Length: 69
Image (cartoon, rainbow, N blue to C red; front, side, top):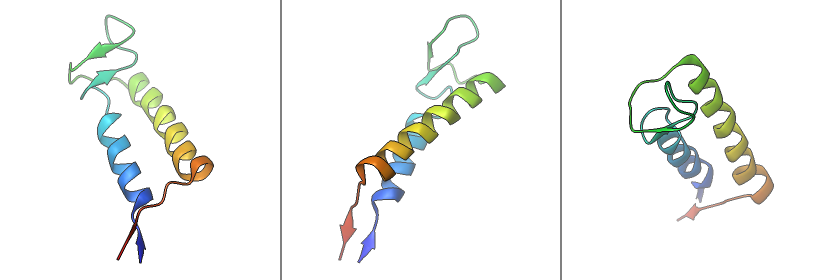
């Protein structure tokens, strides 16, 4: 049996938190910009910290597991 929980959570969070795809914190003109597809070093750092925090919560604190087989 394979545990697909960490893989699914990591992929979903990566897609949702890609800076500039859905939203960007901080934006170039506003605090939050939606769908502008332009990134900066600051926004990459902020999204990395958010990603690390959420993946830690989901995988270590909550312990999400999806078993197959």
